[in-house]
Length: 478
Image 1 (spheres, one colour):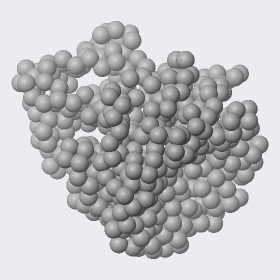
Image 2: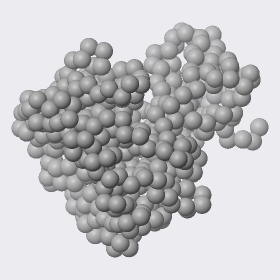
Image 3: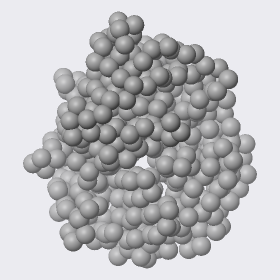
Image 4: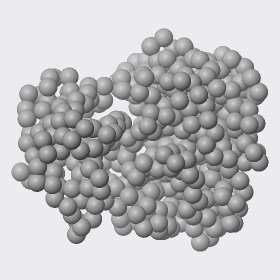
């Protein structure tokens, strides 16, 4: 069988021999400024070897500069991102970057009008070649939703934000939810002028956009700068940068069934204030996030929120030495640690890359950014992890694992052999951007059912781990 992936077909059983190989875990990210030209850099950090590498210096001018969003991996293994400024119209660019060859390709110039302007978020992939994203400006003045086809290079303006009616100035990302729709937020506009939550149906060509609710400063929080999180309980969670009881921001819960929004945490000085990123839900079921202010030195906090008990706990207070004022979001890597960036602080006061261990609550500064050498001031950005096999170091597990499609709903059953049924097996499902969709930890029985019916047809990544042996396979669902 020559195919590099296998299909989960209706009523079929595939018996596979998995090869477990040691894997290199590499984080990729961008800084807003610094580098040779002081327009920012693309960098990598190898978790295995603790090695930082500057890969590309943004040049400003026609190729764009000053990126404030995040990178995302496309189906071809390239990283896709956006710069907030420069390009032919000084309104930013959409670009592709090959992490192996370090080749940079500009895909699109934002023009300040139909094409939008000044994107501050990231793209989301809804099919093999189709990307969606937002800009904070352009269109009719309040930003746009757009699509871009990587195969045909066709751009389309899908929606113009128009302030009071449907919000304006979106800063975060679109979230592809399990129902196949895209959800997002604007920081301004809406009924109260402080932002909205909306739904966009990419398959509805008549009325794809629906305003779901408007933020109200004291009741829900105001001006969300980040993105929504679809949690395991089916609700959406997010953070507002301002508003709330103390006017320092909030954490809120949104019910996508009845469009109700509930404030669940009011930020204050002791807890942290003014979050500008997004929440993540880690493998332990807890939610983690960052604030850019508040805490012991008013330099921000790293916090945990338990959605089952409603308990909020500050896990780390940022300080100038170890990094301060984190402006983005955390990412959970394959080693179980959380990684993030601060905009300022560290040895050069230009930001740091850090690690947080949720098991023992330890914080470790890993790298100090330094101007022209490595970039500076990463802003509103999140790291992305890409795993690469090391082909010359392999461990083989001579057992067969069966994958059974139970019904046409795309519910699959992973059947472990008896020799593994009493072992701790960790199973994760990722999309092609490296975003973890499902996670099953400490699996110690011989069968595991995984329901993929809420996810679009396409290619997904299945990771199975036993101790230090890891298997990564592509799943073609549909």
